[in-house]
Image (cartoon, rainbow, N blue to C red; front, side, top):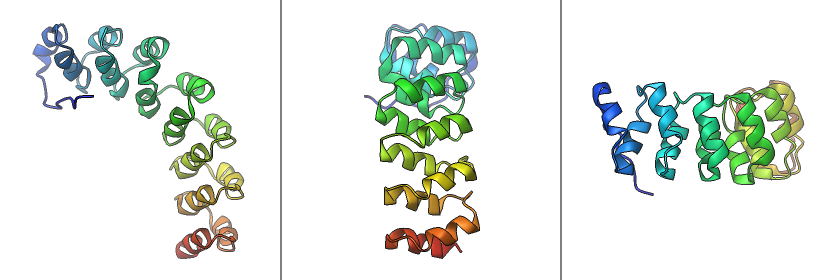
Length: 188
């Protein structure tokens, strides 16, 4: 996919450029953080996946914009999962129907709810659980469960999480895997 220029488009030109026959021009408008909601709404239904993907990435995209894309284009689901404006409804949907790659990205999003983090912390994919353990919004009770995970990369991520408590670090400092115990000891 071609890199889209982040060069600012003046607000007074965004409507006109968003109707260009060239997908690249429309995508440039879609990534503008100051673009108006009605333009994002139209672009979320654009025929070009590249344009829809830029709408999915835009932190000012609202739930209706993301839902338009979610319903029509699974190729943009990773960008939706990364979006810091994701709603819990959409995050919940992606946590259940998305691929492991999508769940991994979603697990790292600090805007997902504790319920979704808890669900993802039980995922069969260790990299998804690791993503939850790395999430800076992960609460202590979930870190507690993850610190006994059978995958040492998950435990290592717990040892590095800023929310981990001293008592948890003490337990991790005795981990059989030296990378985990060393990491925990360095934080004590």
